[in-house]
Length: 379
Image 1: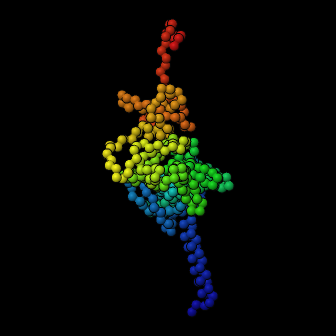
Image 2: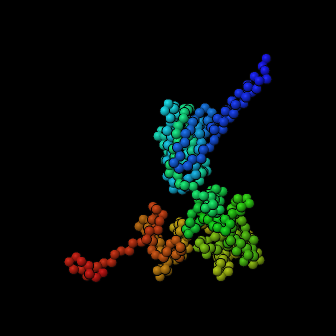
């Protein structure tokens, strides 16, 4: 028969064993936060959790799983990080290094050098997996270098935190054309990761909403019901096109016809508050003659969409104050004129189809009219 003291000793031993096992399980699932210059000891064991990864060195390789240890670290855009794993003497571990971006996408992989180098394109919290290849286990030392010093939270503005941590959007300068402008509290941030336009951030539901000031302007000034989208065909609605004075681009809206604005196509002048029909107004009962749709001018669209230029219908004789762009195509050259903006100043340019850039046009050197001994005196 077991005495009370013997039972107590057995219970205490069992409790201690459970505590040790629990500690090992918690350790294997722990996420260690790494800092620049760290040298951390680790252990891939049978109790380590399984993680999924993909061999990026083989095209189309399927997803695999292996046991290992997970780490996290905060990196800034532009950091050139270097991570190495050195198995201890006598360790059978053959490491696999897997790096995951803040969005969970695998961006780094190594299974041969025990070394991983990566230049950080987006700031955020990254995850590093140290896994055992071919079911190997063992202890190792992990070293990390190249991480920037973390910025104190107090020095990071609320707008930047919302863009990075909540909306997951890349911030760019607001001085370039065709950007999405997001109002966050009293601040504004710009990005090209979403459609261009004016947005506002709602702290309550942590979402952004597109603000269409042009739609509101038409509804208020013309007293019409502006539809969410134009129907197809749009013969039974009032189709109104206006030029946004901010970016110089044309935007088309459709509205329910009224007694004053009948079905048809119009152009609205924001500055003069004039609505001018572009074709004769039609009703659903008026027969229409089918027309062949015109192909969009790809060169004009490049200047408008990529550079925010307001392209003129024709180039005037005096072009000194305009942006003049030539598109060389085969033996022909197509010339367009546009009003300058903050990005493209007045001058002559040639469109480079290879780079998509507007290269300043090179003017030919003037011929020499008077030369003596091969030296030009008068040009």
